[in-house]
Length: 457
Image (cartoon, rainbow, N blue to C red):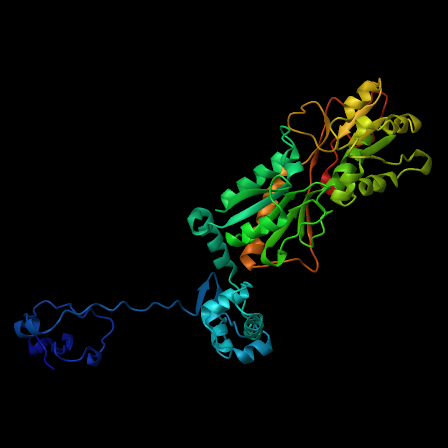
C-alpha cells in the first residue's frame, strides 16, 4: 500500500491499493470522495498509471425513525405482515413476508407455471394436482395480487393483439330471421360486438336450424377450432334443448330460460319494466291498468311480467284488480278476439304490453289512442318516438354477457353449474303521446317526476 502527497498533509491522505489488488480489500472511508485531491498535493504518476478508476458509491439513505414537527413526534414503523396473518399461516410462513406463487410451487412440489394454471382452473392440470396446489396456497395464505390483475386487464385493452380468442354467438334461424329495424335482436348483437372488440376478442355468429347447423355439427366446429366461449344469444320456443358437449365450453345465455341448460343468464329486467309501467301510469292518473302478453314470452323469460304485474295489483283492493291476459304467440293479439272482450269486460283504461302491434289491434276495434284508451310499451324501439313506456337497454345486455363470459374464460370455468346465477339489466320509463296525463286526475304530492327504477328494487 502506498500514499501520494507531502508528508505534512498526511492527515488528509487517501489510501489506495494498486490496481492488481482485490477491490474487496479496499478500506472504506465514508464522507469523502475517493477521487478528490487537496490543494497542494502533487499527482503520483506511478499510482495513476497502475490503478483503475473507482466509482463513487452512493450513500444509502434511510429516513429517520422519528421526526418532530410542531411539537408532535411522529415515529416511523415498518408494517408487520406476519402479525396480520392467521396463526396457522404464520407457522407455515415464518419469514413474515407475503407468500408468492413461487412459495406455493415449492410447497406443492411443482413448477411456478403449473401453479398459475391450477389457480385459474386450467384443464391442462389434473384435478388432483389442482387440489394439492390449492391446499398449498391456502396453507400459505396466498392471494392473487389485484393490482397485477388490473395491470393485465389494462395491457390487454391497450394492446389487444395478445388476446385473439374467438367466442361463438349462437342463435336459431327464427331469431336470426327477425330483421326488424331497431328490435332487440339487433341491439343485443351490436352490444356483443362492441364489448368483444374492446376486449380484443373476435365474435362469430352461428345459426342453428334445419337449413343451417345442427347442434352436433356446431359442437364439432367449435371443438375443431378450439373455441371455448359460447353466448346463446337467443333461441325461440321451438328450441328446448341444444345437444352439445357443454363440459367443453364456458357458456352464458341471454334470456332463453326455457332451454334446458344450467348456465349463467343475462336478461333485461322484465319484472321491473312492468312495475315501472304500472307505477308511472298511476302517476299519470290511470287506475284500471291491464297487462297482456304471449304465453310463450312468459315461459321463455321465466314468468317475469305477470309476477311483476301481480305485485303491483296486490296493493289495490280486490274489486279494482285486473287479471293479466295471455294469448298465443302463434296467433298474436291480432288473431285473438278475447283481447278486446277482456278490455271491455274489465273497463280497462290503460294497456301495457311487450308486443308492438297491440295499438293496431285496438284501433281496428274502434278504440282511439289516447282518447278512449292509452297504451304503454314494455319495450320501446328507438324508432318509436311518440310511444310511452319502458326503454329496455338491450345493447347493455349484450355487453354484460361478454363481460361475464370473459371472466369464465379467464378462470376456465366450463360446463353446467350446480347453482347458476342471473344478472338483470334494468330499463327506464319514457313519457309519450300514447299515454298523456289525465286532465281530471290530481297527482299526489311529489309524484310529478318519473318513478325511479331504484325505488322498486
